[in-house]
Image (cartoon, rainbow, N blue to C red):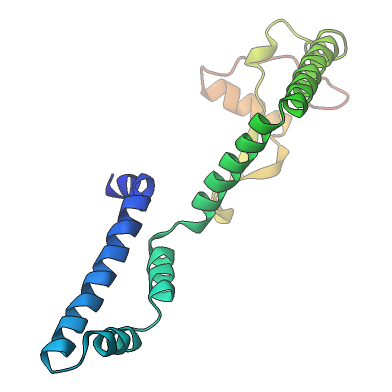
Length: 174
């Protein structure tokens, strides 16, 4: 959970990083002043030795970041700010989405009720596809279903299969 705390307290971490860099530079300035340099020259020399502070801070922050997740959060916050800023557009967008979802649900209900009829049979929820397995191929199901004789043999050997009548002209299960 340390990563979660770090993710949501990154401003404090960034502030701590900036303070620590300033402390290092200040220590170097004090060290150079102790050798006899003026304070102004020591500060310039310490900054020159340390390098570009802003670049070091940015590189350190990039090492701590999760760019994809943080960019998503920034985009989400920006989008919410823009929606809050323009309430007229927000109202039209929300109403359009609500209307689209409602029409979609109504159309699916109509299609489901009239066009997607229940499969034939007394208990369609108990219908299963039975396939054979080729052990040489890594126990992956074959592309075709089990033949009628193999099905009848399996039905005799197990109690979980109920034998349904076969269509004689197609030799497929109903």
